[in-house]
Amino acid sequence: MVERVVSLGLVVTLKAKTFLGVLPDVNRDALPEGNRQDILLSLNAVVDAASIQAPQAVVDACRNAASHMISAKFPASNPDGKKDLGDIVKWLIAQGKLEKCTDAADSLLYLMEASASHLVNRLHSRGKANGPAQNGTRPLSSEDANLAVSAVAFLLQDFGWAESREL
Image 1 (tube, rainbow, N blue to C red):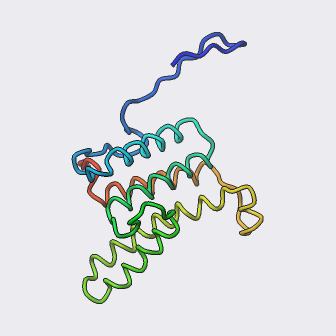
Image 2: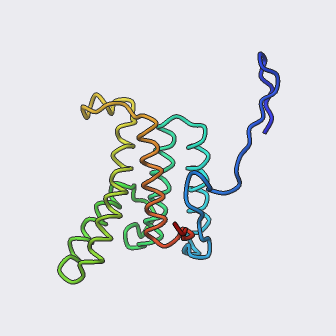
């Protein structure tokens, strides 16, 4: 994209066509077919926001992506598609507690995914105009935005939707 800036002449902005550098590459075939487009659009919004937006916009994009991803992975978490991330996190936590007695590995996965999602959800509330005053927290920072992006990357990897990378 080329923009004309009054004092500097022309500014050229390069935009990557992949998630490289922001999120792991996505295995599109691994995404649930019925949710594929919504997930990819929400991940593109994360990449777009992460490169040029303020922390609140990045966290908002991550919250939206996490909601789409969890709803796709666990359809029972959001059967009508109307729940926000906070309610979806509560469902994940409840599932982790229910599964705890029968399968410790599945229980741990639910709780790890719930923790990553809960983190993004709490950062979202911190970014609201009255969030710091109401909750006694500091305002969002770029480090918080990076943490939210990392949580989305964790979910992609944990759900098996990211291309594997060799170390």
